[in-house]
Length: 223
Image (cartoon, rainbow, N blue to C red):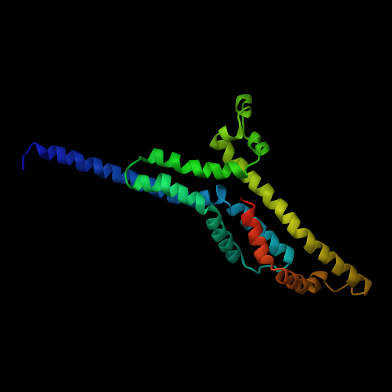
C-alpha cells in the first residue's frame, strides 16, 4: 500500500466514526423525547381523558384499570396517528437512513406532517394566548411558531376532551338522580344510590354497545 494513502484512510475512518457518534446521540435524543412527543403532539391526551371520564361516569371505580385505559388509549392513538407516522417515515426516516438527507433536514420534514395534524386540531384563540408581540398575533395560525402551536394544541385537546366528557357524563348523572329520587320516595334514604344504579348503568352501556360508540366517536373527532 502506498504510504501516502494511510493518512487519508485514517481521516476517512475518523470522519465516519464521528458521524456514527452523532447518529447515536441523535437517536438517543429522539428516544428520550418519545414519551413527551406521545403526550403533547398526538391524540393520546384527548383519548385517555375521555376514557377516564367514562369510567368515572359509570362509577366502576378502578374497572377498567389504569393500565387498561392507558393501553387502549395508546393503541387508538397509534391508529389515529398512522397516516402521520407513514408520512414521517416516507419523507424523513427512510431518506435519512438511506443517507439522502442530513439530520436537520430529517427533523424539518418530520415536523411538517405532524404540524399539519396539530394545526387541524388547534383553535385560533388558544394559539393567540402564546403569541407575544402584535406582529405575531397578526399572523395566521398556519404561520404560528412551534413554541406557540404546541402548548395551544394541548389546551385545545383538553378543551375538546372535557366537552366530550360532559356529553358522556350527563346521561349517567341523570340516571343517578332518577335512582336517588326513587329511593327517596320509597323511604330508602340510607341505601347508596350509586350502589343501585351501577348495574343498570352497566346494562344500559352494554345494550347500546357503548365501547363501540365511544371509540368510533373518538376516532371521528380527529377527522
